[in-house]
Image 1 (spheres, rainbow, N blue to C red):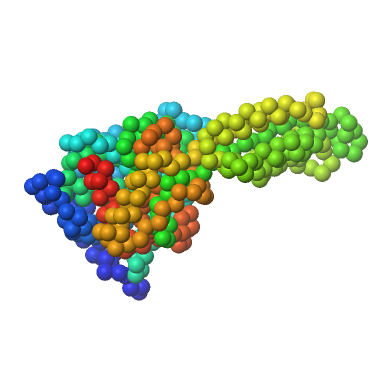
Image 2 (cartoon, rainbow, N blue to C red):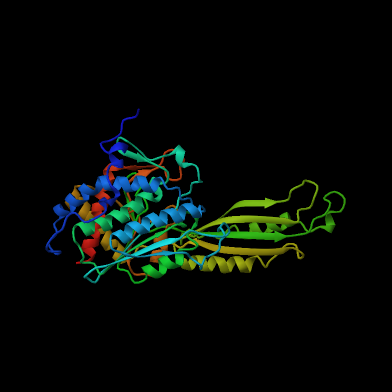
Length: 428
């Protein structure tokens, strides 16, 4: 039998889920010291692991509506138990993309009202990339400093973090914020087609937005991410016998080659725009002139206006055809907008670094250069002046892996502490 850390599965099972309840109060809400916060956060770690285990053991792939409804029910009940006004929202306004399923999962939106003026928002996602039935291959377990589980870093740890940060504030009797909004969606892994509008609208009047995607092995915070777009070419021609009468056909592959040729140099290193054709299909049989051809391009941008511009260019350029009788259609979709770091985000990140260093004795790196894929934090920052920080989740690795996804147990206390203190700082 493998040895577990001090928080064994047996011990975890004995910790009642009702531990998410007030146990520590302070008579003066303006006199909570960092040491008091640290004490409550540290005491909450075991309960956090119980919640995390429960969430991991609910399979919730992006297209598993039954599982998504189940985890939404569990999460909404926990938030209601902590005194929130909670809505479970089924979206009827879906942004349709090439791979958007007919039905998407719900959004849990909870609102806590305090006595101050600040408007704080916490976001995370309940869905995973996994198929139903895969849980048996990656159940929750703890080995040393690593807790493993299906979707544990992406993003079950983020959901558990949001729940327990609210719990920690409640234990501290902290109510200096004006409103605390918790929003958990269940379609992030498929580019948030049903929740993107709600995220943008809810974030529009917030002061800070903390997004609880994992912070990677090193726990870095991120203030900027690339936007992700996709372009699709669909060409219709006319089939004919390639050997007997090729001139009777309209070769969709020939037209596709022409279009790719004139659309391959749209990248702009100066602005960070990248457009690369990555997938193409045409024809099924060697001796038949293909009557259809398709292609897909991956598009990245650092500015929303670049997406708007590339869409216009695509639509204009495809009008120039090689074969007059071919039919050429192009579709462009914004899978995620870019997230740009504003002055408020920089200031909040500096405060986060100071808290980590002065109060925990830890270093904290902040990335301000867009790298990698997009994030729901970008939808939050699209129309808002809020300080938006991504990567507030725990440290770990193995996202989208069917056997190695984990979080680092010793990052629980620092991350919950940091989020709690940032809320307090933003509410002064």
